Image 1 (cartoon, helix red, strand yellow):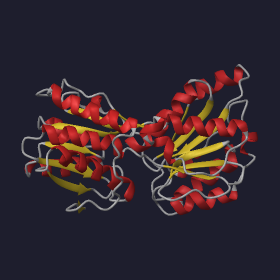
Image 2: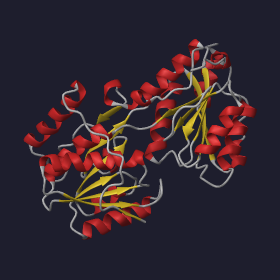
Image 3: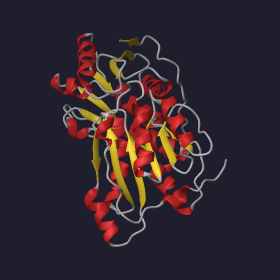
Image 4: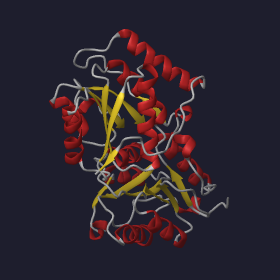
Length: 351
């Protein structure tokens, strides 16, 4: 792949004015950190993120959290716009405004639902590193892709769910049945059925990336149909489980704080390895377009299982915890391989 001149776009002072509100989303920044870095004369990389959804949505939230941590450490200047949405032209206008007015070294975000726009803009600004969540491949000279690859911890969450269910019915509420979501859902089911072949899964896709009300409604429907364990692939499900006194599993980030009495564990996506790798490449002037998949896998620390919460209602038997812990260790060592199944889950219903 071709190397670029992106490494030369490192900023030593604070970014110029940020006026993306006109694009229709919400903006945010780390102005205090940026000012401190500038005052100390530190060489920092300018990063602006573009999020289709709100940063409260866990998928975008994971990216935001990793970038904010780097900003707090004084390694980057970081500003973002979220809630851009999927209206025709909105994402493209936002990216062009970022590229033209702020000229950052890196533009990061999610391009799911806005794939064509992101790739089109990247071609027009070859000296900016475009690093986007995407279901497609990288494109020269400057468009790199990443995704969450948390099917491995999802399998272990499934082991816990299959061991804890009393009705043998687990409920799963997902966003949109695309490969990136399907592999997580399928791994969760496979894990559950590996320890309990009698497990049945009720699966609903809400056809949205962020609609907590719809997700909660779907979860309550599953509970009415006998589900006593819920997997929250999307936000809103944990609240339903907590209301009914049931156990749940989080996704993308550790969601224990949402309902400590309900959340057993979460499949955690860690974007820090990806961000660190990209920053180092840009600093060295060696950035290339690439698929960053490996940095979101367990082997490189990009995926993990949150601490198992034994304080949930009813507790968790020690042998169940031991079984899940052993499975996670086997994945880390390579002794256990979790298959990647991106097919639409059998029996699922899409809104």
